[in-house]
Structures are given as structure tokens and as C-alpha cells.
Length: 269
Ligand SMILES: [Zn+2]
Image 1 (cartoon, rainbow, N blue to C red):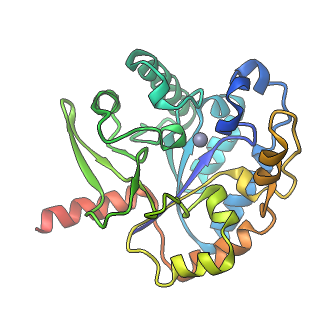
Image 2: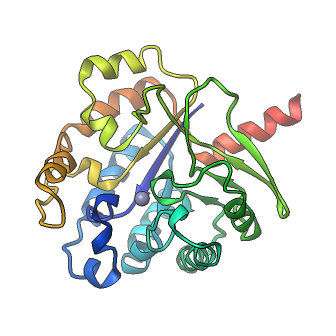
Image 3: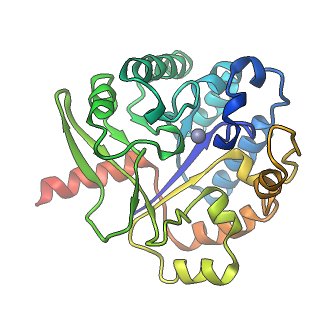
């Protein structure tokens, strides 16, 4: 099962930038999300692939046309919080308020219920039952917010809540703690390591990319350290060239389709 997902947020929504986490600051930074998301949509169109897009509520409110375009092209839309705070930094009450704000913003634009969710930075743990209770209570049926070491366990995981079952599709790290199937890890791995990890490909892959991963014009910014500026931009001009052959070779699906497979397999056993 190879699942293709994108987290739709701008170049400044990285977690190394926490002291500037404010809509007042964001609103004055040059947005690059439109052209970079368009780049992703063109690639998916060319490859005839569908994917899941976890969209930051704040971005949806600023750029509703991007949400409509993603929906128009037949992709799945999920919630990625409103303010991009790590879930484990929030109280349950604040987590719930933020979720409602994001889901309402997305639903007002698309007219469709939001049933999947990803916390920023894969910041939930399997032990965060309180968060799964809140997600399920607000109609979330499947989630992709947990990062796990690859121990060969059966995936996805089913979590019981008072509002029903919720399915968790985690991101797997290698045994050395490298989540190489997306973001800066995917971009910056040397070819030799990359080929080793993908040949043969793992049976379960959660791909996760951001519009900024494909932005050759990623701006140098005093929001970041010199090293982080270098790392943020590194290989953004090459990421599509690395990703497209992988997507051509190994079939991927959006989460909604993975979840249908899971239900069909469960009923068949
Ligand atoms: Zn994010």
C-alpha cells in the first residue's frame, strides 16, 4: 500500500520557525503557495494520479481558489489544523477549537464533509487517546498524524474511540529514525541511500510532500538560520525529477482509496 499525500502550507510554515508563528507575521510574507501547488497539480494530472491534500485552514481562508482547484481535479481534501501548531503543544480544548476552525473553513469552501486529518509535524503519538477521541467526535474517520519506527507491524492501525473506530495511517521511519518518504528527507538523501531504500520498495509507504519541496525559488529568509536556509532550498529544483520516476514505477493511491481497501479486506476475512 503506497499512499500519496501533500500538506498544503507555505514556505514559512516550517517548525524551525516557531517564534514567528502568527497570522500577523504570515500575512506580510510573500506567498508562494499558489504556483507551487499548481506545480504539484500539473504533475498529478500528467501522471493521472489522485492524492490526498491535507490543507492548512489558514491557507484555505487566504486562498480558497487553491482548495477549489484541488477539489475540481478530483483529489481528496483533509484537515491539517488551522494554525499549524504541533498537536502535542496544545491543550485538548485548544486542539479541538483549532480542528473545528480548520474543518469549518474547508467545508465552507468545498461543501463536502472533511473526514481525514493530519496533525502538523506528525505530532501525535498512539498514546494520545484524547486527540483521537476529539477527532472521531468531529467526524474524522481516518488520520495520518503518527510517526512510527518500522518494526514490520501490520498497518494501518485501528483505534477505538467513544465515537466509533478511527483508522491511523502512520508515517514510517527507518530503524535509524529517518522518515525518508517525503519532505526534506526525500529531497536530501544521497542517490545511493535512496536507491537502497526503494529497491525493492517497502510494502507500506506514506509519501508526504509540501509545495515548498518543489520550489526552486525558495526564498532566503532571515526567519531561518543560515544552515536552515541552505537545507530548506537544497534539491528543491531536483525533487520532481526524483519523485516522478518513483510514482511512475510504483502505484500510489489517496487515503480514501486505501481506506476502502482496508474495509474490503476486513470484510473479506
Ligand atoms: Zn504541516
